[in-house]
Image (cartoon, rainbow, N blue to C red; front, side, top):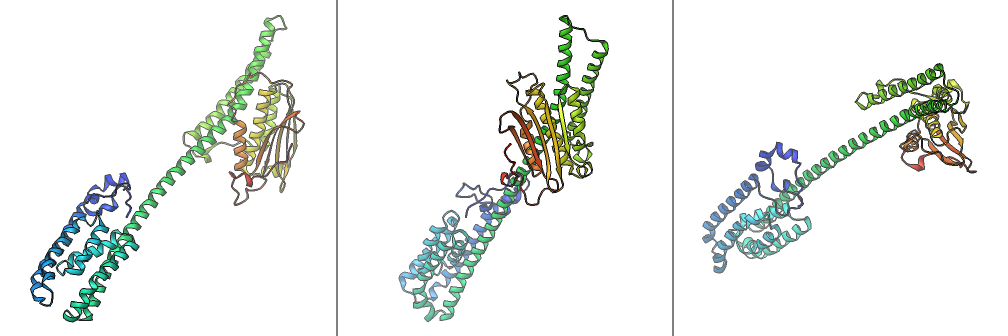
Length: 443
């Protein structure tokens, strides 16, 4: 029987019970073929040996009354019985060898009756069922000549035969039932260990998912604000450098306006960062402040225009119906526009941007951000992590929608298009399965 190691934590708490009250097979390491005996095992082995020795002694005293046995059988009977009693000490390590060695004892010795009884029990306990049955059949075959020649005529007739068969089958079934119970315990322990490992894995996955969600939220929130801050600061620095070169100097009012815009943008970035960090420190998502939605996209476009970005905003959406969209869908739509405007400022500065939001119940919500591709790549003035679009794809997939980004078919425009469900996510859809995600037409 294959042994499975006990849990280390349980071993520390229940060391006394393990050393003295549990079988060694339930405590041994899986790779160990010969488990060490526990206190219980020594007690059981000692009891079996004592009972076998007592039976040997009683039958030895009764042996002279069996006048019908041949002399040579009377001579070897005690020695075979003693051998059987001693062999029981190796029944744990070598159950098959001991079972086979007891077959001649069954055939020739009445003094070894007690030891053979425990050997039969050991067959059912420690050997596979098919192997144990074959050895048991060998014992029945070996004892048959003695039963036919001596037991039936002189020791009770066919009643002795029936008793012998029932006696051996009872102890064999007892051993097999104990074996099945131990196997059940081992399976339950393995199932519990797998469940603990699975629970740990689920916790790790949940923590990783939460970290990814927080990182995605921080990117979406801060990248937009910091890019606006960089644009305003860059414009102020450019105007200041131009004034130093002889151009018309900036007035105090213009410098003050630019400084206020930079200050307000920095304050907004810090406030949004504080909200995200509040979640990171352990407060529940139910304690977050109001989250941006479809109705806030207009303000997002206004901020971009204040930063000098040229944006054409088209909205084909009923305000009342849009207000009933799920909050997470509205937030995803807002983040798509935010990321599109931020990327346009990074990679195509000065290029007009088209923002379109449309949809209706039963049709879905479509959000698109398009800008002409610049003639040559823009120098990397605003750094970025490059993870925004990947985060948006995850957001869209979690909502049961899809996101596409890249140059259009003609290669003249860069498009960022998201299609999101209007109603609840369909039951049974697995957002991680690409087959379950709606496929966007080529652009």
